[in-house]
Length: 579
Ligand code: AMP
Image (cartoon, rainbow, N blue to C red; front, side, top):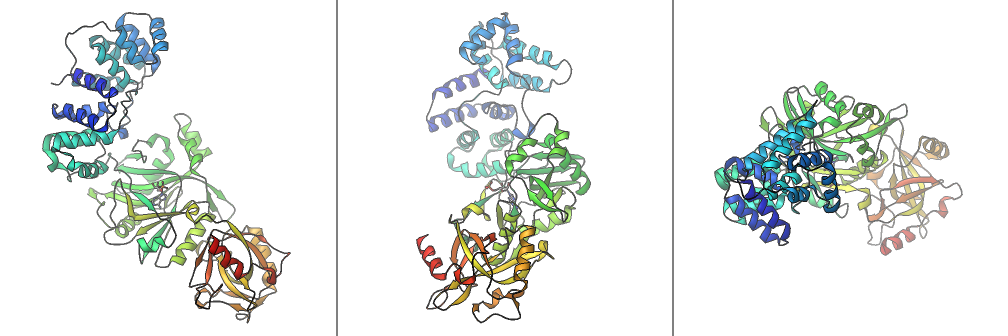
């Protein structure tokens, strides 16, 4: 049975060491001498805890109670403990000073670990006194160095200055003989996120155990994350052909584990956040009938607007009001949330991590009944980058931050804990950063489709080619309009509808609008990037490809301008060359 003193001594040494390599070596040496459950318990203790984050391992003891325990253990007044605390700023140091115990018997790791667990488990009426008694008693038995660290761990203030990655390195050396297993240990840790369980398995079975870890109910896996791309076309380069664009919700990542009646929610940091979202738990109970399932999604605060119940989403900061201990129920009313599920990781006893995304998505759709606050991430599957751009513009219109593009390939597995190239994120701020406005001529109108069916769709807009005295299309604007704007524009253009493409307008077949409008009305449009585009005609000819304005947004109607005062193709080309 290993002594807690061994741990305490290593903790003391580690506080003084700065070298990464030396720290890892020291930890590895210690773990080499431990066995079985001691390995597991020590792994938690090194991180200043008594269990994995998802088990909420806090002991529920603050300074006030600890102060009483110290006074009781060493027979001094609370006043004296307070004075010493004011001087040292650390109750661990205070306990160290007051403890007069000499060389006598030390505690075992097991003694300390099980006592800390008892402290945690004391809840309800009279539990504060019980916690004080339990801590006080073990402090009496502890040597000074031991007492110091018992206190720091109890208060959640061990702070040795390193995190779980150092431990993983040490495990590689201690249990696999060298650092070459580190990569595989990290991979296992993404699936088995309980560092104690991982350490114990490695100690017992060696590196052969790696790869055997599987996703399990009650133990969240690390979230898969998206890579970012530098420019829009990179989406096509990284994921050629058919792909899925999903709306990107800027809220809180959540992994839901449903095991019969027991429903748990885990955050991206793998903390148990179930108690914050009673509304979501309730809705899952109703709308996800399957017995055993793990699903992945994003919780977002939202506002429902207007009669047609269009939605707008609140930014992440707002959702953080739901991070509370008290008045949780009240806040489910004050700040309603929805959860958008986009992945399924486990179903009826079977891991789905190695299944490709299209299969996972269809299983997800089978299991999740959309209703009220339970939703599926909205998506569009397409080969066309243009359609993705439109989907992106629609997302911005709803005040979302962007989209996530997902590979549909056979190898598109769920890469737990990785920033994966199977998922790419694209946000408004990634666009090249130009923010220019253009005065463009309306030459066509598209009807609303999908969500906007029956309402305002988009306008095809052109720039003026001065030399040729004609209008060449430059962008299709579908966002930024209020309902009033839409009505006003419909009024303005109603007198200018023509049956075919006007002679002085050049439109590519693939851009043909539902209605042609003769050049007469000008609107101001904000855009973020000018790109070469086979779809538009602005500046096309003489060996040049047409130019297009990317991520356009309607700003206002320019009643003061006529079509021949619109932004010219020449100006656009110059701007493109400058930016
Ligand atoms: P970021 O935090 O900017 O790296 O973006 C990745 C995060 O976007 C993920 O961790 C999720 O929490 C969040 N997210 C929102 N919507 C989706 C979606 N449809 N698919 C994947 N991740 C999403």
